Length: 168
Length: 116
Image (cartoon, rainbow over all chains, first blue to last red; front, top):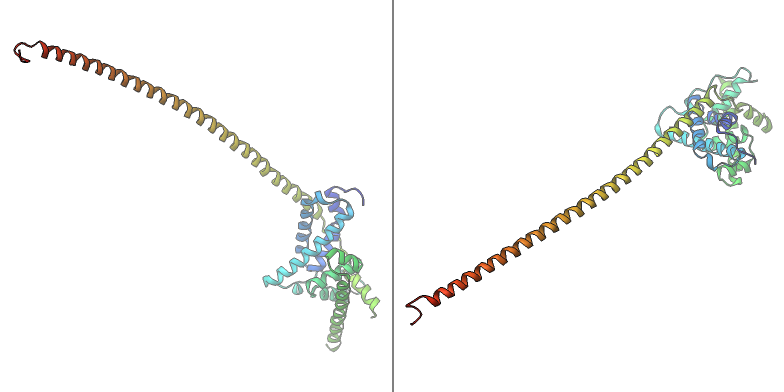
């Protein structure tokens, strides 16, 4: 617990967290920026119910995850360009294996909404399954089993790509 | 690649990134703009409500006064008409009585008539 900083301080301190969740979930910088803005504007409207900075951080993380899931589903229904087909931002030159990183991000972006967000919360936000479960109102066992299955799917995708490259 | 290595690679691939420059300022500006936009209509609504209430009160008061005044005028008029009618009736009654008396006297006193 602790006192609640001003809204602009909250934005300054947590914008990267919200933006990172949205960017990895949506694989589109522009949409991620818009989503980040909407999440913070929603926080601003609900500021009276926020008690501490921890509370604000959890609130933002949950809002970013839920809105990302909604956005992914909305885009699927709209029959617009699928997020899976949206180009990933340029690979980071500092990454040890930029090709592998790009493949992993692409694989994560091709997951269904919920497994995608679970993966992001677990491996980007470094949240324990019980924290994810509390945040998303899900049983811990469900989070664990879905994460386990998602890891298998992601590894399978990666191995398949490696096979294709080997034969190419 | 074993499980632990795979998870490390996944962490690296999904690592948090810095928010674009200027995003925080844009968000704060937009939040302030929305808050100002929300406040204005509320203030306007309050003034409108008080204005409507005051107008209704004024209309009620003036309407009531006007109705009361009209009722008094009508009562006075009705009383005047009643008095005039009463006066007219009393004059007519007096005239009729006088006429009847004259007629009786004339019939009684006329010579050659009345069986004498």
